[in-house]
Image (cartoon, rainbow, N blue to C red):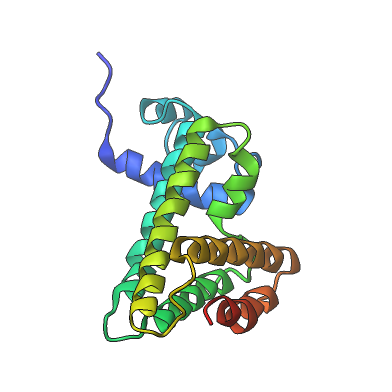
Length: 196
């Protein structure tokens, strides 16, 4: 009789495996690399995930949840003006990238490039994560419009989407150059222009 799945093992696979995929890329690592890092037998992986692509979809959700847990509260802090909240959020995420010397990039952007054409499950999860992110940004933008801190004629959803697209481009370039210059430009040039 097969052993029932162990939630602790699944959690370890997700946290350790996410780190492996983030460091090496989805195509740069195999199930063996993920299970070895988690300290479990390779065959056990399939007790928890139907495929490596299903695993990728799960780690995307975990990655976004970790960002929301650490930095999401910045976007809802009513003591701070909404546009300042957005700036603080992006600065905090930039500092996350700085901790790794801008070598990892954003897992959302990385897996978008690697998987959106080969895994429908991952593509749909990526779309869902981006929509959640846009919703958070758009809420702040709408609040800024109501408070007359931002022109009310702009489409908050469109502005939020462009912010995220510009941010992902900046993170990609920072990863290529291995420095913070592109992220700093996003904060000092792109963000103020989009939110003026």
